[in-house]
Length: 106
Image (cartoon, rainbow, N blue to C red):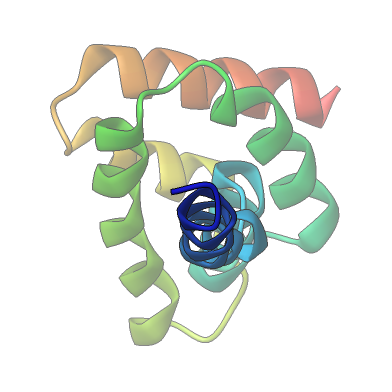
């Protein structure tokens, strides 16, 4: 029975290890904002502020905005991004995103 516990601990640590190496919500959000066409500095600043204030469900909804840039090759403006965020019809996502954009633009 004593030998069983080390094996359980080994298996449990092997299963939990991949979760430690996954990307944080902030880094995924930053990457998504960059994919959408925001400059890296602006995307990093906004992601830092947004990741703590939005739920995982809300962050997943924002993933749909990555398609913004696929249709246009130029950088996305904040106005265009906020227009798309407003279309998600989630007032909290819009408030957090617009607040982050305002603070990061200053």
